[in-house]
Each structure stands twice: as structure tokens, then as C-alpha cells.
Image (cartoon, rainbow, N blue to C red; front, top):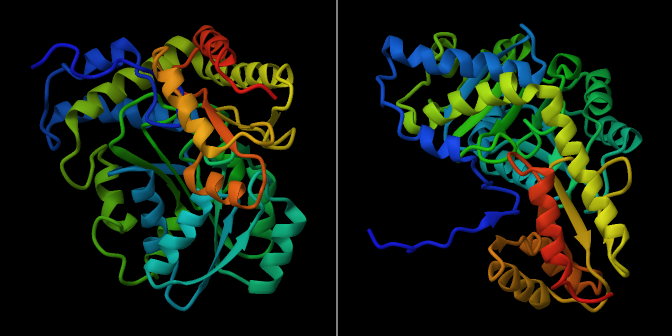
Length: 378
């Protein structure tokens, strides 16, 4: 293999994310049979640690889907929305739109509540949509990766419950970086993935499902095979996957989750992410012409979206990406579709700063210092 074939960049995008050297090295741990006793040595601790991170207690079971967060999300649609029911897809950005697209492409009776990009979902707005559409199921985004907005999921899930609907939550970009407290949320299924705040390579979609979800799935038809949580659960209860997993990723996941829970500590991890959000807020406050995109009180602990000054273009942000590449960093010039819409409307474009997973405050400090030297002046 050629030396120096690939650039070694420090990733400050929103996924995939930086891997600790120890996680890279764990890829060299022995392979194993996924129906053998060796499998449980990996997946037993993995499941236990995931439940601790989620605050799930005994209320939820963990399913590991071979795929991504999108795989788990689509499984929630296939398994938990009956053909004669209405599903309300609440969207405040690109990934809320994706949940809606999944519902539509799977032939479900789907309606959408669209929130302006950069805004959170407010209880009164959600309640009005629930009264209008009377859905049986609601999909909602915990942390909108495209805008850096985080929702108050405890309040929103309570509103959904008050209107007699079941909630399905996309937690792909926040799980492992901020508290979830699943037992308090009471959502039927919470979906996430490995390649963002867990600080791992992509390869598993992670789903937390409760008894309500299992009971509902038994009444839904045409769920497919891998997308059916009733096919998945018997294997999950044995700490197995339905089909052959990525053993290399399982080894890495075992090591990383043990580190997160037992070495760094869950509360310390969440505090680190919150501190990095504060660092970005302080950085942006000191930049004339720049501003945070998300409203105060609804800013993500894992990804920040920053509005550039009026006159900065999408092309400028792409040039900025190359300037940061030359400094050894991968810069995120913002979500492409959103920035295209903002620019076309004459509004300020945004860039994103991913501060999730194994990014540390010291790493973020160096990145922001480098970024300051190349940002267009406001």
C-alpha cells in the first residue's frame, strides 16, 4: 500500500467523527462467531452500556441493526405504522424531512408538520397539528443535524401521549453526547447510530424499543424481514444480531462504550459536550457579523450551526473548507440543500461545527483558533 495515500484530517464535521487511537487499534481484536459464546462477551456489555447511556432502565430492549441510523428509523416506520393509520412527521430540517420521505416511500398515510429551519418544535404548534391530523403515530427529531437545533423531547413526547399517539424519535446525532433519559420520555422507539456522538465508525443502527412498540408491531402487517422489530427482538434478547454483524465494529464498540461508561463517565461526557457548545457560543459572540443559527435554549451540545455575515456565499464556504484542509482540518460548509435555499432567498448561509464524540475542548480550541484566521470578515 502506498504511504501517505490518504490525508490525515481532524474531522470537525457532523459524522463520521474522529476516532480515538484506541478505537482504531480495537479493529485488530480477534474475529468471532456471531452465534458463539464469544459473541456475548462483546454484545452483552455493549447492550448494558447503551442502556446506561440512554437512561433506559428495564423499560427498553436494544436492537442493533446492520446498517445505519436510517435503517433503524425506517424499521420504526415499517414496524409501527399500520396501513390504515396516519403518521405525522414533524420536521425542522433535512433529517425530519428524511423521516417523512421514508413514510411516504413505504406507502404510509403520511402528513408533515414543517418547522422553519433554525427553529425548535414548540408544544402549542405540535398540539395544533395533532388536533388537526389525529395521527396514530408521530415521528420527531431529537437533534436536527442540519441546523444544530435540539428539541425538548420530554415535553414533546408528553404532548404526543396526551393526544393518544405513539412517538418515534430520531436521536442519531445526539445520543452519547447529551442526556436522553428514555424512561422519562416514554417514546415507543428511539433510533440512533454509531458514527456520531458515540465516536465509532458507521455500521450499526441502534434502536431502543419498549413493550408498547412490541405490542403494536404484532398488529402491523407487511413489515418485511430485517425491518421487522419482531424478527429482530428474539435475537436481541440473546445479545445477537438478526444477521451476521460487522465483528470489527463490534470489537470497537465494546471497547469504546466501556471507556465512555467506566473511564470517562457518563456525566463527565455530557458535561464535556455542553462545555464545547459554550465554547462555540463564546467564539461566535466575538466575531462581528456572525451569529448562532439556533435560538438560545435550543442549541445542540453536539453540533453548532453558525450564520455567516450577509454577503458570504456558498462558494465562499467551500473555499473556506479548502483553506481549513490545508491546516489539517475537515471543515463543514453547512448542509448543502439548506444553504442553497438560504442563498436563493437572499438569507445568510450557515456553516457547522461538529463537536461530538471524542472531540475534546483542547482540540476544539485549536480548531477555532485556526478557523478564526481564515473566516471572512463580518
